[in-house]
Image 1 (tube, rainbow over the protein chains, first blue to last red):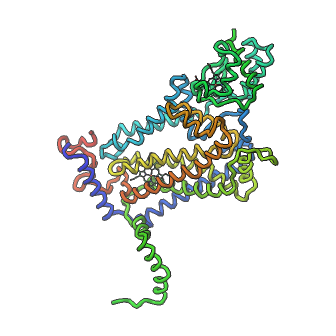
Image 2: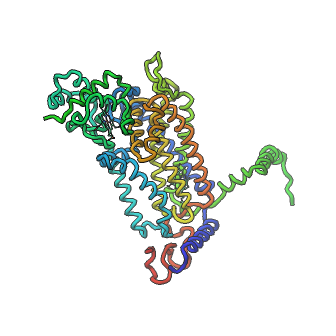
Length: 270
Length: 269
Ligand code: HEM
């Protein structure tokens, strides 16, 4: 390198300032006019979206931009799909990719942290003064790959399907048959609860559900522990070192016991 | 030859200029505004360079519509005995279907969040394409990345507030995600949930984050960001033949070209 990088940078910036002073155009009103036009377009788009959203939907009836609101929050049931706003779909879908318990934190913390550090550090590891895209092949390829992978993840997140509680509850007789607890009323009641309480948003059971956040398959969980243990576990998973799963104590003792009976009866079928 | 001032000019001077001078003498506000407005920008800047300003406008619109919503929204998850619905939910219903133009304010705020996030990414993409994060704008880029993160946090915390099923369960999952992080994770999840279950305390906490703490951080960062862009200026499009800072006398040479040794192999190192 003929000259020191810092020196070249400073020379370039001095030239830049000189040029802007001598041949630049005034920010006000010239550049500001373009900015204002863009600002107005932005506001109009916001109003447009609001109008389409409002007039196409009605209360909880969704239009093309979704409903005004869904049913009031109710911790007890999850007959619908937990889903963040669309611009978090890419994170949301990452979880589906890293479904094994030991790898979950790669998706929840690892990748986002690495991405953030790479983004923050960009000006410090890409120090060449060259700015033309045609001369920055590495940067351009990296950018295209980032955009494509975020696009794919967002798309996958948007189209990922999860079964609703109301669909899962239909499967309870099948489960009872396979696991052999059809005659145990308490276990069947527990299975109903299991189907509608959102457990299958994280766990899998006899091939149903979505493995999320490293939650284990529960088809044969009854081989490991008994009902009393499960009741305690569900009332306070944090006590058992499980900080991912929330407490289900709000279901009440009777319901917890039903769930416990169901889990104990789940010995893997066959 | 001093021109005799008309009475009108004198009136303007005493009514407008004198108070401005008084303020400027004490604050520098007038000089500051002039510094911001009456500066030059490269003559070849492109439309893509209006995206930052558009992001600013989107944020301002969010702040305004958000302030109006805050006048009618009630952050409480308690069940209202008359309607049988959570108070927060009922207040959102009221804003949407009863309040005059409430639907417009809420709709703009709700969809404005998406517009804001899209603009953040487009603006960042433009900066990346133009290589505008390089010397001397490294800190400009860093405040930008922090704005991207805080901007998305705005969306994350605001999503819970309507207290409907979608909001509630998305947030449950979101908080649980934090719980998987090593070390601080469980603590963070506990803090965000505001208790063993997601309920009244959670809502109050998220409301405070969404309308005080995070927007405060965003506004401060925007201040630094705009100060830096005024101080350092914006770059010309890198492909422009008449870009500010070009090397004279040769073809509009790449400023980064390796000089000496191998001519024309520019851009390699
Ligand atoms: C609330 C969010 C933001 C606001 C209000 C904002 C505002 C602005 C404005 C008004 C400009 C002047 C030029 C232009 O309009 O393009 C600018 C330039 C710039 N912004 Fe942002 N910005 C935001 C977020 C970001 C983000 C997310 C990044 C990147 C990570 C970023 C990095 C930059 C850089 C490096 C420049 C200098 C560009 C140049 O010299 O051409 N900003 N910003």
